[in-house]
Length: 118
Image (cartoon, rainbow, N blue to C red; front, side, top):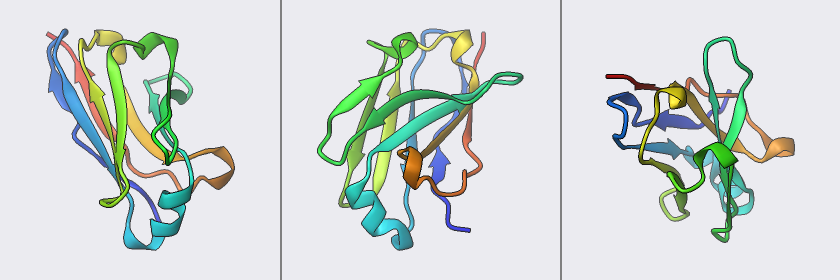
């Protein structure tokens, strides 16, 4: 199964920052060049929720709970999507995943764990 690969998570104190990356393998080159990329997160006991999205042209949308703190960007040449997370809160603790927009999703990757704790 072809998957996207998330990385960059870790343990950070409240108020800290992390930058997550999502890399697409060569086989997903065409899809990456066409479709919107979404970042999701899932905390224990909760459903997976959409955090941010970015179109191939760079238009972005954010969930209300991250607006002003998170920034999504993409490097189409490198086939990488980034999620810059600032002013992190304990409630941001979750496994973060990326995928293509709804109808074009591939198998979910392993995600990257973000833990915000003092």
